[in-house]
Length: 520
Image 1 (tube, rainbow, N blue to C red):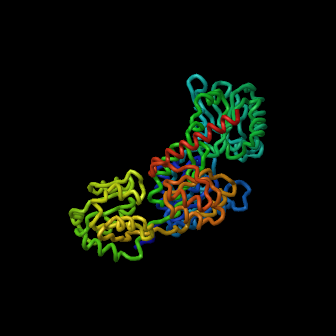
Image 2 (image 1 turned 120 degrees about the vertical axis):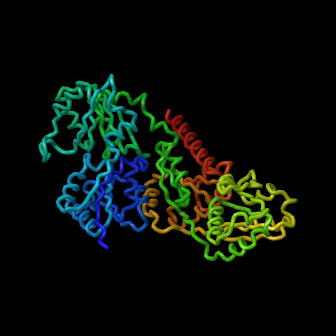
Image 3 (image 1 turned 90 degrees about the vertical axis):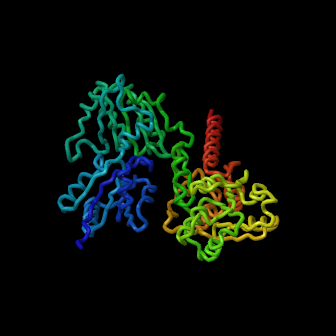
């Protein structure tokens, strides 16, 4: 068998928001053996890479001691590809716009290494869009020009930047988008002014576009540089010059999203976190997925297998989580049993998510408590249907004993607790990243969906975890968080992910209104 040929895929990671990567780009990361990424790449994208993939930070922050020289980086791409690996070169924005993707592609051609290019959303487009600035408009700007401005015109290796022509273009109804120019903004504007562009031409600067740190400053050709200096606008930022920049005030939208500017940590297991994280992102938040639990097989299936062997003897099967449902039926299938063996057993579910998952197996739930906690199951089933009955509870290996004790205390004839999964602290989580964000006070809220997520978060981070604001899905989780030193500011009455999402939204909107009132 011939050795697998390697390939380098130059992938545009987008402007910063994790969900702005292309479908094709995400697919490339998922099948990568090696990912070489830049400073502006969202760390959340690295979670898409296989667990065994090698992750290499290339820097490109500008002067950082961790930066890799371009010649060294080119050699690295070639070396990994020649070992038969799928190498993803993950670059902020688009690999062929205002970066060195073209140079890297040339190096690969010279080395006869196969490569592909996956375009990305460039900040030159995303920045203005997220700031509410259209780049063309029938009344305010019929064309757009993109340019870099970080180097002096006399020092560029290619043609000098034609500021005179660009100034004339903007005067004629065009829009200029200037990248890498925050440090030389005054000089750039002086050149445009010298080219005849009016001092009152609308301008805007957008920093850290599409992220929770996005900041937009508006002004004119005569005033923007000073305003940006006062607001400490620095790289990464894009500058928009032209009449279209004046449309921002009534077209801005991102800053108006309910969770704009908020960085929220989701601690659910990876498999369950996606929908919750996506819901928060749609509301404008930056979401960091930091799974503190991982679901694996129990140490022993003995109790569950014995229960499965006598399924028709149980009067009730009580599921306490959707994970328990999946794990139970996966084991039932692997042991070559039939769902019809449940016989006449009634099914109880704690929580609507658990009930919905049971419904996916075409089974009807006979009892769901109004309050989504184990103690409420007694009133949902009713004392008459508990006395003298046999109960099976497939659940996590480590869980509270409240439910079995309650059922036995109310007259159940037998309660069998059968572990069908267990939760552990996951490996290879980005602990140092979370610690750094905590130290910089950039985390607004940590979300917890069980006591296990709270305890594991604290065990992973130590003292760094204390005194953070938290959102907890229910009273038991909230109490655990308080005992661990968290300031629980969100705890919905309904213990579901949609309710938790809405409660977070309400909390943040109330906080924003209070801040606005205080500022005024």
